[in-house]
Length: 91
Image 1: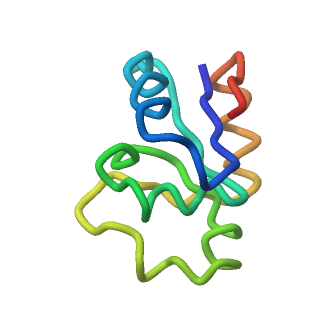
Image 2: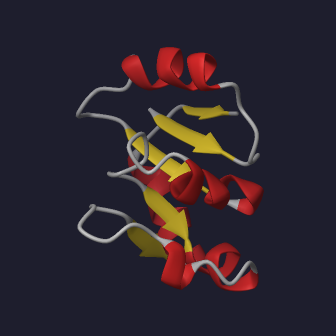
């Protein structure tokens, strides 16, 4: 399953409940304002995909946590991700 987060504000308990259900066979994508979650909650989003254009548009590249497995991807990579992981759970 592909979990996509497009908003910057989710209550922390709600995020924890959602993320507890994610398995090794799933993927997490942050895009739109959701890219702010990688800065706000780096402990929750240490291993995820982030749409590079949204990070650049918000000037967040330098603020992304170092040492995590955050992967910046292009729109083309996003299409491949949606082909690989389905269904999509949009938040």
